[in-house]
Length: 291
Image (cartoon, helix red, strand yellow):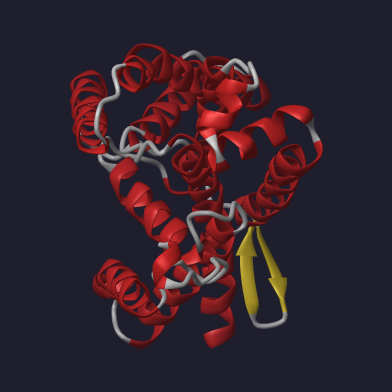
């Protein structure tokens, strides 16, 4: 039934949107193409697994512990990798390679500790809810609810608070933020911790749903990056729009063709947008002399 695949696409979009919102927040504000966002996601999933399964903590404490880890991991990456490169005026290429190196090192470290096998957090069948012809599991409904809550809180924070407006100012004019005496370092630390928490929360939900393996972070990172680009890099809400478009498109391809094509069609969509609307769905077109 197409309605079931549409529902699945919306739920997938909720998870993609959380990761993309964190990635887009970091990229738009600091201009760091944060490949290591993928390993923040992966490491968070394994920390959640360790707390919940290996240490037998309850679900709430495991969630809280994982989110604290995610925030700290983001802070450490900014403090010891990205900010020193920023102070030295490193090119975007150098930052990109450094981020890729961080991803590679930590993913292999995780594989060494936990193995390459897929880890499943729960072997029991999830309770299902019927909405007409659509069937959604309890964890899928939690994923949708988590998206609504976290995206609303994040966008509200960015639009309505002093620190949120500083983040937007840093994204729009970083030189001006420095000139008026604001502490750019603290703002960047906040950006990386917030973006990492969004990735960590998504990782916990997906781990509960389908489990994880050490390579899972790269797939969702690439989807998040595509979502940010096609939604509009310079608009925080663009990541959400792009994520839902990708989620729906992937599930329509699964329905009509095969699951083997879901990632291919994502990059076909990216190419189409880069050729026809590079500013993204919510981005504003600029005249050539403004580019």
